Length: 125
Length: 514
Image (cartoon, rainbow over all chains, first blue to last red; front, side, top):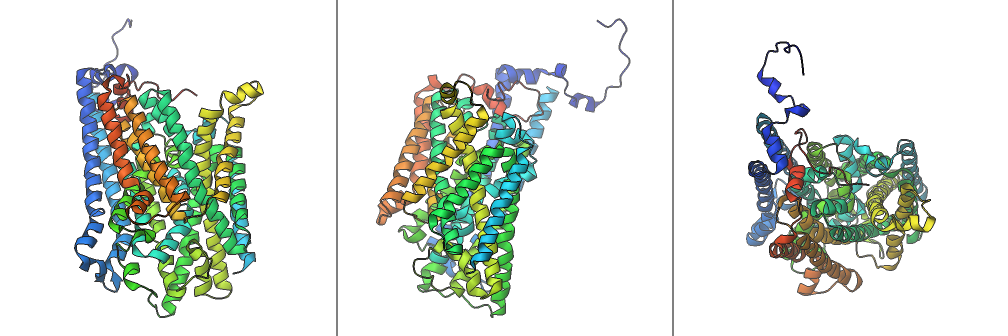
């Protein structure tokens, strides 16, 4: 279409990040067309996210779900005291919350990291 | 207890709620505004709104009452309420937002490409919403009676009226703002009196709690609310709360107001922080109750402990003032949770039951917004009538039953829907039906005929531990048996649910047609 050659442009690596409508690389097309290759990338993304979720859930199941079992199997823990405060009260009324927050924060960072990596790979195509 | 202070506090909370709602009315214009605030709500405000909506009568009054009566085991309630958001975060927060659906019924339809599953989900949203509204209205009656001596039907009616006026007038935009404010109102209303009471308590020489039968109150595994089989009951409760949170109708609606999946995760993270901060306080009231009020006046529900405690610790004006602050906070809790539930229940009633039918009756005169207003009225009238008929079984117990139903119906639907490609339409429907029926039977028997003794009482009173795995199992097995009924566009839907929004991909129909 253009009569004259386009002006020279210095090509740098960051230019590859720009997503313009006609910048749809083959990998996004693979994803759109649900080809085998697209499927492989999708299952890779989902597996990574699911693995992360399972790690968090397992931590919760052991850490929190283990408490009643601990109280049941080791009755001494039921009346253990730290300072003047009974340990079961301390754990269930206070400690649980900051731990939940730290775990949730870790999860959010990890899952965003997975998505960033996925976007990068797909864009590079 | 001084009536004047209490009435003033409650009146202020109701008025502020209505004024903010009216302010939002001027901003909400389009249908999309009406339902999900035009999706322009920032994660921080959204998180405050979720917190405001979620901290219900059970949190504000119920937990303290339970800890006061039953001791340590009751701390699992606030723990479960918070952990539920961590589970929601890791399993469904981003996929749910990316699904682009407004309600869980929309999600069911988009993912499973079936209007039958949509209908099932709609019925369940309404059922769970009503089950959860019931204790809010009962709690309001109880709080107003404790503070002013008014008959218990007045408080529920007051909350019902304010909520219908607000929801019908402003829709979700005003409600988002109202809810965000309500969280901070509630946190202040429970934290400030707690610090004053703690200061008074240490001034008294920090006396220890008075416990009648010492061992079961202070130590774990004493039995949940007098039910037997404490180990089973503890695990089942924890499971219900952890898995049920994602299935609560008012929680789900709130996720659609996030701009994208990443924001949905960040919102959930903030919610965990906000809830954790709030839940540090209710158990304090339960423990201080044991110190200052070894026994409640006869006929007083344990749920009224929070409102009675300041008067017992600080006789005179200071105690009355604190009681009034707490009563105001409790009303904020009823109003905000009831508003959120009403919004989501009304949305479903309007979309799936009224639309079409209404225009036929009125000859196309009724707009969507008018239908929504009528639906809001319906959403509140039914649980209000039920709250007058059903014997109260304790706020937190009622709420935990709603969680159990949500855990055994929507949790399998959402988790399998987001992560399992082989979920078939028939499998999802079977899971909803089986889980919903089992949980509903258990809840119905417990409310209407219970509580029962021994294993039947434990299994029916805390059904999640068996109903949830059965629901999951049914959905999986039936799906495997009907591979031909896997929705046609599952692969495309999965791309939409899981890929970050910054990729230019074909996500299919991103917004459901409205």
